[in-house]
Amino acid sequence: MSTKVIWAPQPGPQHALIDCPLELVFFGGARGGGKTDGVLGKWALKDAQYGSDFNAIMFRRTTVSSEDAIERSKQIYAPLGGKFAASPQPTWRMPNGGRVSFRYLDKITDADEWQGRNVTDVWIEEAGQYATPDPIDKLFGVMRSAGGVPVQMILTANPGGPGQNWIRDRFQLHPFPKRPRIVDVEINEGQLRSAVIPSRITDNRALLDADPGYVDRLKMVGSQELVRAWLEGDWSAIEGAFFAEWDESRHVVPWFDPPADWLRFRSMDWGFAAPFSVGWWCVVGENFHHSGLYLPRGALLRYREWYGASGPQKGLRMVAEEVADGIKEREIADRISYGVLDPSAFAQDGGPSIAERMFSRGVAFRRADNKRLGNGLGAMGGWDQMRSRMRGENETPMLHVMDTCRDFIRTVPVLQHDPDKAEDLDTDAEDHIADEARYACMSRPWVPLGKVEPKPTAKPGQIYIGPPEDDNPKRTRL
Ligand SMILES: Nc1ncnc2c1ncn2[C@@H]1O[C@H](COP(=O)(O)OP(=O)(O)O)[C@@H](O)[C@H]1O
Ligand SMILES: [Mg+2]
Figure 1 (cartoon, helix red, strand yellow):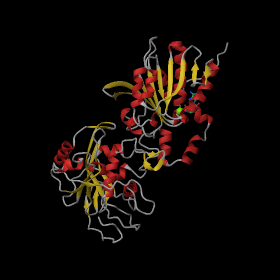
Figure 2: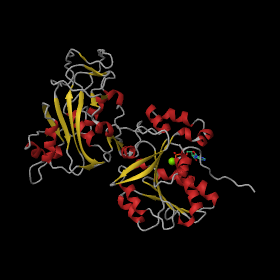
Figure 3: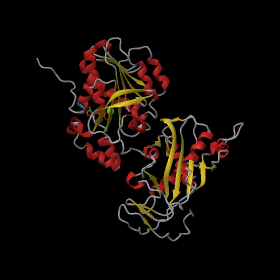
Figure 4: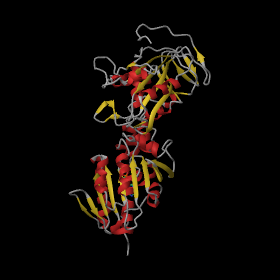
């Protein structure tokens, strides 16, 4: 008697997934790496092992992501003897009595529906579509088994999307791991031992053999970074980054003490329940070389920051006076020329405004220009200002960040376009630092000269202070 193989795991990540007994698994990386097939296959095996005690749900935020999975489930589960019902909600009665359902999960309250049921397995497809992990975390509360099935939540994701940031932090994807590994993941107050299984296109022989042109086709349609993200699943090569011009090797400057005569100022985005962010900047006073990087006169350099957050999107709940005291403490040795603060902090709501309360402690701010977008008539909005400074001129950025400003480096490069309004950024993400940096840029508008200037040269590691450049009257004075 011959048996027909309906589905078999591929060596590498799919095997790792099937063998993994841990309660939380992150299976992430390349498009077409075999993630969907891996989870569907594992579930068929679990149904065979546990029968009617097995009750699995795949959750998604958007319809698109689930269509593929449902189609593929038909190819795998139907020949095994599963029975599919498309309505009221797509659900499989599996060949051994288990259940596999496909549902939406958007808000935290969507998870409530499942309270009190024995949900043994949860799969979050396209976890990167969730701006915060909260709705997903809530599902831990519904996972249990009266029948002794080991419960498991699997998150699958490709790089990109509004959740790119928390996923990378939570599963420690920086750098993207080469092999499966175990990490202790912090979830709310607790810790959970979890598996991180990286997925690369090279793991999917089935796809590469069936469609040898796949990789070349991807290379044709995407930018270099995008293709790297797609194929290797690299979380630091970002799909759809709002600041596509960001390049750590050009923008991040190893720490040095800025010369005392460079103008210094600070910018701030206020937050109480949400994080606040304070950035300290200096204006490069003369053409400057440091560690192989060239900082032209007039460039902005972020040399210090204070990010008031206790977790993703959670503020420190400090009052204005306390924050002001903290600012003063940090800039005790600086001569700060001015501060800009988001205009909403100037609102008086039956009492003194946040700005006034900080002023009472000796920390002065003026209202920041909060224009996010240009007017289409030539006036640049804040994002354009920030972007054009990042891009700079002649391959020399006009905005730099000291390597001590970790929260800027962590949050700004991964910000995404708003899916509904591409010229703005997705405000569901951790954007407080970007906002504050935008205020800083708007306080010192900059336009490229559009002319090629020779760069003074210095050897890497050398510090060079050049003569000030001739002032060009066309450039906005700094
Ligand atoms: N074990 C397997 N056996 C047969 N085909 C597979 C297997 N794993 C993946 N594939 C095929 O490779 C392609 C990409 O896999 P998929 O699981 O959709 O990738 P991902 O979800 O990571 O984007 C699909 O056509 C899928 O059916
Ligand atoms: Mg998939």
